[in-house]
Image 1 (cartoon, rainbow, N blue to C red):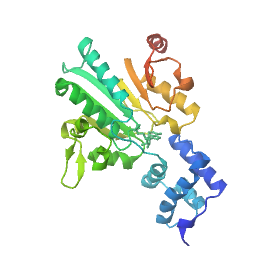
Image 2: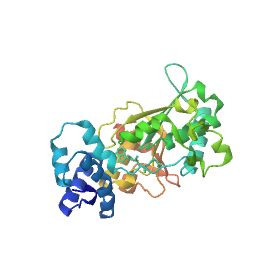
Image 3: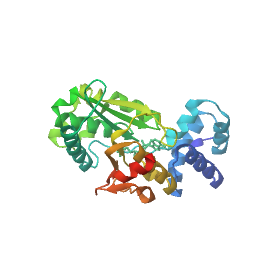
Length: 286
Ligand SMILES: C[S@@+](CC[C@H](N)C(=O)[O-])C[C@H]1O[C@@H](n2cnc3c(N)ncnc32)[C@H](O)[C@@H]1O
């Protein structure tokens, strides 16, 4: 049987939707039917199974983490680019400049401490843009205790991001000044310079599960991620992100996203930039 021609019944689509929602919070609309068929049929064929029903039955039984992960990886949307929505990086630069000049948090090693989280980082363009911007803006940065945590549920994009190598076409829409920040490789690819790569730690993390991080973040980028979730899931996520922010820290979300009923406790600074209201922290602590 040619499984490229596999059909997806309403019942099968329903089972797939239920599963990816339960695991990853992803809310698949009917417009995603064709995409689901094209992405999953390759996997189903690879497993030697004859239908999507057989595939879901298989996933319900198997203990194989790789197979479970492949299902999720196949259904994520990973579109991203360097300097996407660049007003956020301008804002971040300005904020970090003020923070470091006025009241840096000092870590146990006596260095100014700064933590940024790129939640739903895809193939890494977002956290690397943060690193490149801040390295260019703050020559002292190398002396700070500065780390960027970059997480995603999709283990394929995390592996790609950690390499820091991209096709040269990624530079197409960048100014010459920005393009000059990347290393050009003989292969025709570009690489993130070591100074920027060393600042970023990539880890797999499902935002629907427990977050293992202990401390808070001075800034969180969670952009173009919640757009794939339904409202109740978004609200819960934004409230958790608010708790993960340091006092005065900022949350950056995607251009087509809003906090909806998760906005409680945040004040908007416009342009999809938010800060936790100071009174809210006292309420949370009570
Ligand atoms: C469209 S990309 C956004 C990338 C980047 N933040 C940007 O704005 O350019 C969305 C990312 O969210 C990730 N994602 C979706 N559901 C997730 C979840 N439950 N936990 C963590 N990451 C998730 C996807 O794997 C995907 O890489």
